[in-house]
Each structure stands twice: as C-alpha cells, then as structure tokens.
Length: 96
Image (cartoon, rainbow, N blue to C red; front, side):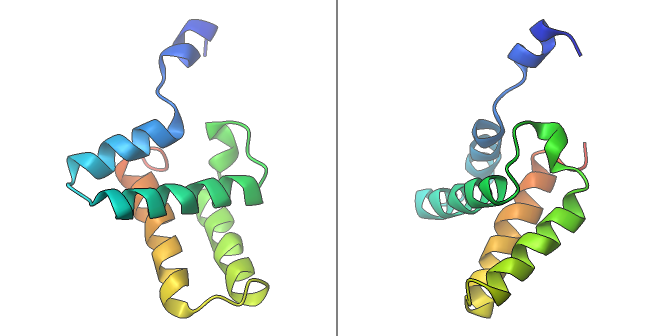
C-alpha cells in the first residue's frame, strides 16, 4: 500500500461514526460505541488497522478481561461486544 493510499483511507473512528449515523443510531449510542472501540484499541496497543487481526480472538480476550478483571455486568459486556463486533463488521473493517 502506497503512502498516498494510506492517507486517503478514512480514520477508523470516523468510519465507525459514519456507519452509525447511516443506521440512525442516537448520538448517545454513538459516543458509547466509539468509547468501547477506543478502549479496545488501547487495551491491545493497536497502531494501525492491520493490528485488528485476528479480530475475533482479540475481541474475545478484551471481553474476557472486562468480565474477569474489570468485573463488569453482563449487560455492559454485551454492549461492548455489540460496539466492537457489529460496528467493525458493518464498517467493512473486519470483513470487507
């Protein structure tokens, strides 16, 4: 991938926001989902889109860490899962 192609690709969170708005999610849901994605990226110290792969294993380890170490409720874990899996998938980031 050339440098010019990389610069034309939208940023991850901008792409996720665009998909959420396309599907008419509320602004509160958008903020929450973006926050979960930011936490996921920081958890895995990701620097590029290529770091997302293997996505399923990384999402599973993040959710497990939330349940075990952060001691979050199952409903909160489900919200994090929906934010990560469906939005990254719908954005074409995980599965083009």
